[in-house]
Image 1 (cartoon, rainbow over the protein chains, first blue to last red):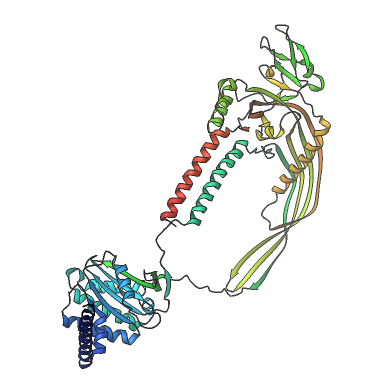
Image 2: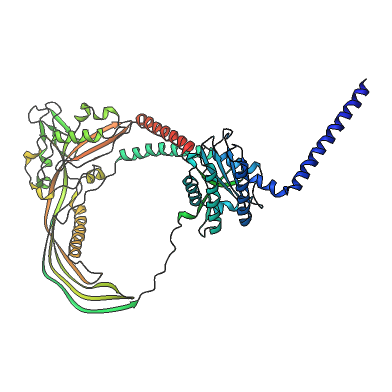
Length: 287
Length: 288
């Protein structure tokens, strides 16, 4: 009986395998017929988890995103969600980007626009050369355009389009000449060296206070100085200050050297480390 | 130590060998030891007490109260009774300096016009001839008193010295000199020379450089005095050490060393250290 059962199972298993192969084959044929590869790539660029775009809007935007991104060697991604899984908009955007392996090239260049309906926040996450193209100031300007198109009134399509066109403008302008990247200060924690330093400062100040007072109580004698002006009388018979000679000399001055001014803040790109370990730039705004 | 007989009760009064005015231990009347106030010990000048006992005590109280870590007993009333008015012996002199000074001096003025810097040099011939009188130069003539302490309550207003009279001493202690004039006189002379040179130099100003060519100072002693200057003195013994506090009996300028209560200072220092540690930990958590 045992052997019969085993045979039956094997037959069932091979039937399921065949069905799975068939299904896979059908999908491959489907994509081949409809020019599948580009379509697959484009559908990655607009991920409408919140279901706020129509299929036509989504594919139009995906096409635009693919065109812009292709021209500048990075990926433009639009993501919507109504469940941020308890994360902040920033963490959600960064993680979504990392976990779905977006980005072009070794530095995974790309720009992700998140419409987070859960946190009510629009967030732009940048990576690779995207960090350099969209400086902090430019991100603010893109967000300005996004909000100007009526995001707060639920105009999500217009907002997304505004993101694409504003980003395209900045990509066309290139990376600013004064662009520089700095890492954001991480959240504060008490580290062991800090604790030790605190202990040292506390000990030194306690001891210092004690010694200072000991010295203060000892007193610092300030010897009185004899006021010889009050106790003297000067009577001069001869007081002469006669000019005997006068001349003027001159020399040419060396030319002054100009010095470079301080660095302006407009080219600054602030980056932070995402949970995936990669660096992201970005900025967001509540709506 | 030497014994003297009190004029009012006949008791024997024992004093230090240099004390010239004190009190009888039995009847508390003032005792003047005239042999220590006559002859070579006869003072010529005196600055009488102008800062009285009440003022001195108030000054001391204020000073002690502004220091939290002194032992409480330090400003008790029994301690304040030890505040003693004391006349200190000084040698004092007036000098006359005949000066003859010549120098070459330069005034330099720099200005910029266009890309050129101009410098104007003006040469002057300077001459000063005349008399500089410096009075009331003085030096403590008592070796037993802590010199730093006494110098710290200086200066006295020397212009207010008056002729000595025995009646100024009653109610106060007084000491006679124990440092001879021959030791002090060269010191005063060299100081007089320095003061005269300073005064002369101050009369020459506004020059970028002064090159001295002749600087002759002929010093002559005009007057020599033995003088008494007033001071309030209080001593305090704490943990085997003697602390002295002194107030200028003329101007009220005070100086002294304060005993420290290690217990009170220790507690305060520990509290401070604890507060800073807490701040450092809070700062470590949120600020840096």
